[in-house]
Length: 378
Image (cartoon, rainbow, N blue to C red; front, side):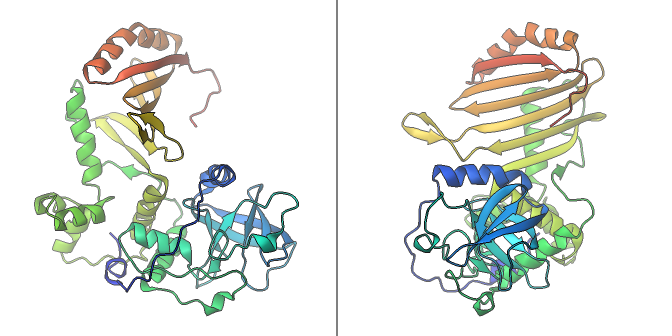
């Protein structure tokens, strides 16, 4: 699905520079606050200009510190789009034909001297498709990236790699779609009929996601290393289109939206799937790996997994399950459509705990509540 430019523009890589620590508490809190705005078109209000040339900009009622292109004025509004959250929040600034990107950080503590904490080469460098595009390209195994500018440098002194241009064009094309693509859509039921066992359902879901094309590029890399047979690649849509002689254009809205979904999946470590569990039975599943925290298990940190499963059954009504798995221990919360359904779930908790224990997973927490009138899915 990715344009050819992302895998062909390989350039010589310069020497590595010492990396700055970015996982400080203020930065993490700042990232969490901005995460819900990922991919959204926003309006930024320029509140102040600091002595180092950076600006304080209010975005979605959140103050941020970033570099802006020349000509930015205090009090003005600036159109922004949040294109990345990690390792630092990054915005597309403006809506011109040539994308300009700027990394952002939390405002400095009160009384701090901005001149002693410059944004250059750290949070806030403004460039034409700068560091965010470079990181996205790296995530997709493209080694060419646009260089971030030192603080105070003019944006028009920056050159843009082919990978950066390709991703900038894809993001711009995806934003033009009337309905954004936020999840994978299953075209066929996971299992043929109701009553299938858990391994069959798991295998069906694995096949639906694995053959969706969402991870096609990583599968190609595995095939090149001899870890995946070519027959598995043949089942993915990119390979099928290539065999039919179809050349996908990365700026086509549907193609761009799918690439944008790939980028968002990489950035957020989150996957959303919706389709049919079996014929006539809709299902929604969200899975996210929480990379912001870890649990110690045998001396090794392990990031927890959060999942949400939504199903609506003819007899039980809507059942919303939220799961957190860490270190082989599962926390489970159910929201049921009625008191009767909630009571039935509680009644069968022992059977569930036994099945999980047999699979090597401890049920560490179990909670069921009845949905109240006016409750909305969130």
